[in-house]
Image (cartoon, rainbow, N blue to C red; front, side, top):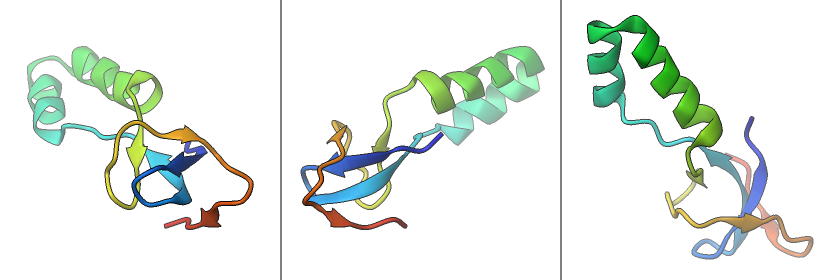
Length: 71
């Protein structure tokens, strides 16, 4: 699910990660389990990914000559 992307702020190729709002997820899970699970699926697959190092949002495709940093 994670892809290697280039972060302009870090200047490195990094693994992207999904940013999930856990408070919203828990509230939705308590209210209705199905809606909570739909939100989780949305965050993992459809929501825009962020840099795993600095949290910067608009990531670019991986670059061949960039520093590799997989944390």
